[in-house]
Length: 245
Image 1 (cartoon, one colour):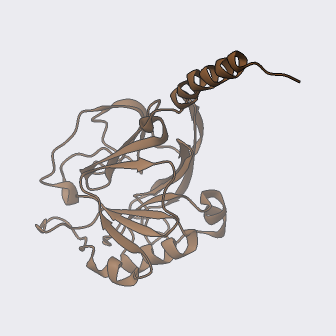
Image 2 (tube, helix red, strand yellow):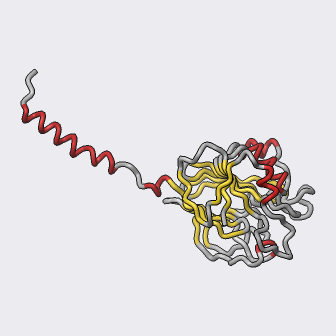
Image 3 (tube, one colour):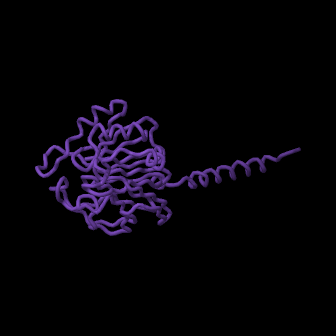
């Protein structure tokens, strides 16, 4: 078969024109990333291109004393309980605090009831543990947990990519050793600790700092990521602890 020089030239030009079209089909970086912003205590906003999820909005009382109360908007608000430091209705959005299965704006969310203390909920009642998938990543929010996970809860939560877990101890959240046990069980890729004392001690707070937890988590790489962090869909496979300001 004979192919003329003019035909070859035409094929070459067509291929060059098609190449930029292929590049243009690649989605923008933000489509494959999530912005995580820390407001303090256990309140964190996870924002993607299509959905935003706010964890535990608070009143500035107890261990949240001295923090700035936020009045922001999010598609979904996931609260651990109705206690003022982790379930205040200060922000706008679909407020979820009761256990159950929810579908909203393309997200599937599961809430599981768990004691908010170490005496079966007799002191602080029950908290809600949350699991959902956002932008292809699986999240678990254990910001208000104090009781060891049951086998049933372990199966429901699974092995999340990102785990938010309270580690400061006190009467109603995990202490360092309890939190480390949960991390060892769930084996998340990224751990984001919440609810612990910062440098300035709050007299009305019974929680401790983060040092004891980090001492127990020597197999995890510790990264200081600041107050805001862009979490890409392709997260590192090595296990890490992200410390947020």
